[in-house]
Length: 426
Ligand SMILES: Cc1cc2nc3c(=O)[nH]c(=O)nc-3n(C[C@H](O)[C@H](O)[C@H](O)COP(=O)(O)OP(=O)(O)OC[C@H]3O[C@@H](n4cnc5c(N)ncnc54)[C@H](O)[C@@H]3O)c2cc1C
Image 1 (cartoon, rainbow, N blue to C red):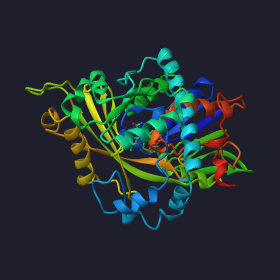
Image 2: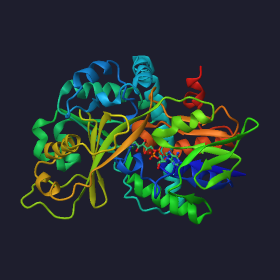
Image 3: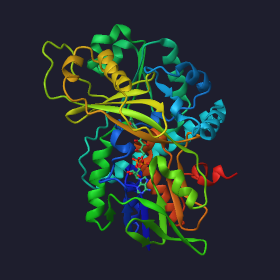
């Protein structure tokens, strides 16, 4: 059986890995010059079933209105996103009902948890260098109300295997001495010992190389322009070089998922939500610093941003901007990430922020209801895998494994109906 995968982000590459394992003859197309140059490239590196709550929190519309035009806002709606964002935005707001958000959180957590089991399996089978760490993650809070809300949120997914440990400021500093200079500002922290971290683009590129060695064919700089459909079944894809035939086609085209999916007869609401990262080398020691650099990835809930140690680098990533497909790097948004470094690592900020910041921007492929979209499309042989929003790295391997099981008609390792593309047709 011939399988074609469109997109070589972390989702496309993990799907290629699973299908190659299942004995498919796999060909991957990507319009970029290498794997993982889309959203995956800017990724913050967190593997966090603990961060499973979707971004359309109840009351989010009030925040979005309040934050319009504010460059320091964690979530910024720019006027340039209009009018394209309206249909997606209406669904996004409808899905912010508390019961729907709780449901999505639980489903995301379950998928994330399963995905990390698949990653553990893969790591014991294949050696890939991607600065992987299993030291958990830590969410730090500067005000008690936010900490209490975080505790409540975590309790809702505790039965799904997402362990959280509440820490007071002293305990947080004991676990992560890098926080010592700001301990008086902390209301406390939550430690998620089961979370992991790793360099997502390095992982995806290494896995692409591994799968290429195992027989997967990659065509880079090759945009797919449409699906080839014959007698109601998919028969391949169209691209600049002509047509490539296949028995199944998996669309893993990130924020562009909706475009090709429509060609396959199904409409899915996926919107690009821009995020930024900066990547700082940690080579030189900071003269006179009392506290070390962080060993545990740390998240600042207020800013939707994280600091992740990735080998000899720190990656600071986050913030969300609804700005259509404007890929330019906005100085104000990068300044926010620098401000986070100054706030959390005051002793090191001067050294870290000298020189090239390695600023990147990427479009999170955000589904309107906060859940990823994977499963069969309307046209026979077409499958979708995308819409993972802020959790694509966390959920990639689980998504790929479940999709493989669906394609093979096997029992899936966890229930998958909630992720089906069909949910948007009802
Ligand atoms: C700043 C930032 C920080 C993030 N941090 C985290 C994190 O810490 N943890 C986490 O779990 N997730 C995180 N995410 C989210 C995660 O990175 C994404 O959900 C994930 O990368 C999506 O993967 P993807 O393969 O679906 O999309 P992409 O990586 O965007 O890949 C899609 C690919 O499809 C290709 N493509 C599109 N259309 C076509 C076409 N017509 N023909 C051929 N190729 C096509 C593109 O070139 C691209 O390579 C972050 C995202 C951002 C932007």
